[in-house]
Image 1: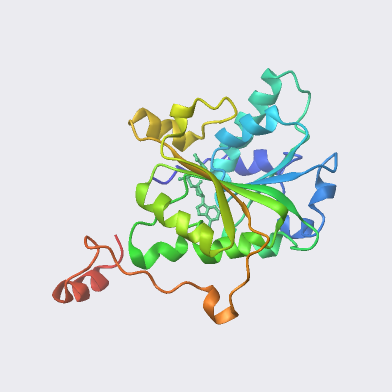
Image 2: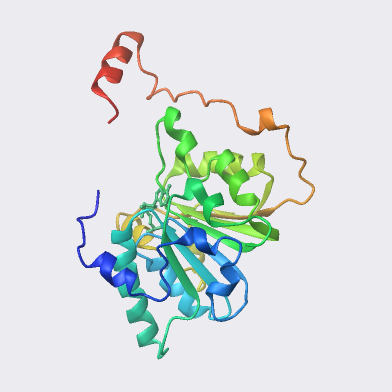
Length: 258
Ligand SMILES: C[S@@+](CC[C@H](N)C(=O)[O-])C[C@H]1O[C@@H](n2cnc3c(N)ncnc32)[C@H](O)[C@@H]1O
């Protein structure tokens, strides 16, 4: 569901010292955005920063960049971050950067040589269930290839989802993109990991009784890159439910998506 426009979000973000409306300007020098040079973690599709605010206040020794396409959700996130840092007795937010941007255009905002990222979080991204939309998944092989160039040599991606099909396919995407999955669970909360911070969607799906699936992957240094024309995985076959009978296919196209 789309969030209603928040008229206050943009003015508040414009006045926020850790939000930038010009992320391209910081390309190649994100280290200097922060007070201290320290490892950078990225939260892709951070939404209302429910997850980000918890991990960032807990880890002042890490710099965090939160990216989302929507200023409205980032506006809500900024307010939550402020509350969290105040409650923790911090006088200001020193280790967060926020910006609105399209994750598919990450190379416009990050330089693969200069902006080295130690960890990427992908929490509850859109599962894009139809086979013809799988390429839009934030964990799709081609996307992971793209993120890989920004990760440092021991770089990691931590991924959580409610969606079984996305979780299963993503395990393949990670392997195809040259990552080793070193931790994996089909029910994260059963493990009672005190380090786990629940995101907004994680709380929502947990309330509905849906377990959180999670994996941690790191770059496999022995991975041999496929040739350019092999790097993009073949179009995936539609699932049985998605296979549209020929006579219906024209109708669906005419009526548009969803
Ligand atoms: C389902 S929400 C999950 C939010 C949060 N990570 C959580 O776990 O609660 C997905 C978020 O990803 C953002 N998003 C989806 N595709 C994006 C893209 N290509 N670029 C930037 N943000 C994107 C959406 O705006 C939305 O806030």
